[in-house]
Image 1 (cartoon, helix red, strand yellow):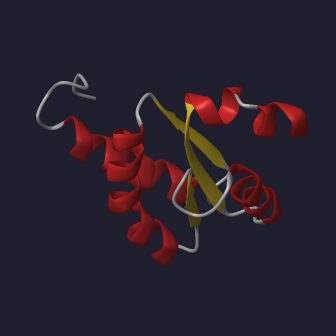
Image 2 (tube, rainbow, N blue to C red; image 1 turned 45 degrees about the vertical axis):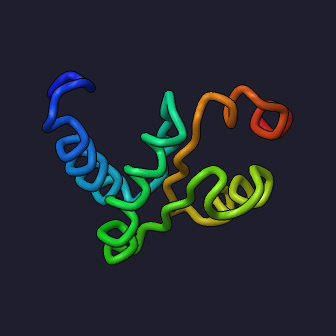
Length: 96
């Protein structure tokens, strides 16, 4: 995997996440250090994964933290993309 500052990083990240999440049929929480990185990745992996039957949920894209967490838990073939504020926040912590 290239360094995050390298030109090919985002493309390789997208490819790796698509392959990994398709192979595991979802069942993943992917955390990002920035919301911009989350959005970029979401746009790139959503269609390919959903064609493979994997639901992709994004923080601040697909509803409130509670809504997307509930959808993630209800669907065993889901991937949730979030930032540190999502998993450190009370929504995630209160429901573990």
